[in-house]
Image (cartoon, rainbow over all chains, first blue to last red; front, side, top):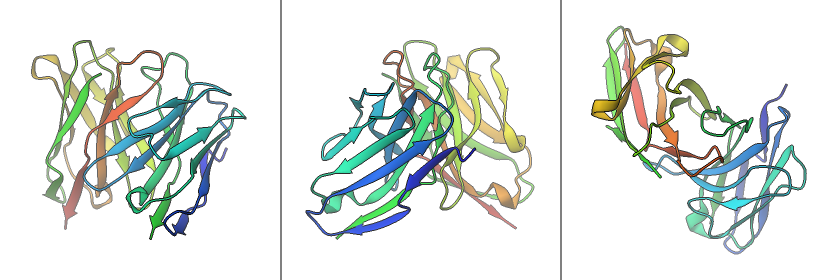
Length: 115
Length: 115
């Protein structure tokens, strides 16, 4: 099993450009999450999904959109990138049996720089 | 929703010394708590989790954590540090927002191990 994979690993954008980050998991997990990691701020939840076709806002959703058309994939889109979106983005997934105690499995991250 | 606070953004120990990383939570209900580790340029991986079964939780790589309700703490310890323990450590807790599996992360503590 590959676990959770993220594409791409690195990306440099200019302000105003758009892009999509792809997350894929092969563990048949119901729940998927997108986080951003910034120095001194831990991980902050951007959007999440509790099943195919469903998405919901997290703590810092502004400027991002997501889609979960297939159970194994969770896409994060930036429509018009801003320098404030320079960050490391992590995708995670969990089984989703009851939510509270599920372990989240993380991808390796995407390092995004917006100039 | 609860909050999670990690005391000390950087901790430095000598190889062979005790490791103590502090985490406090605020919650009006019994929490579910996690410690994750992030090695350089990698995603997060689970060290251990507390799910109310036992207050002393043992994890991987010799780490353990004790849940103390009276102190609202879930500190991470390891009796003897190894060079390979150098990493960033995150405490996280159940968001408390229902069956979503959402987590609240602390700010992270970087552990430095000196030879």
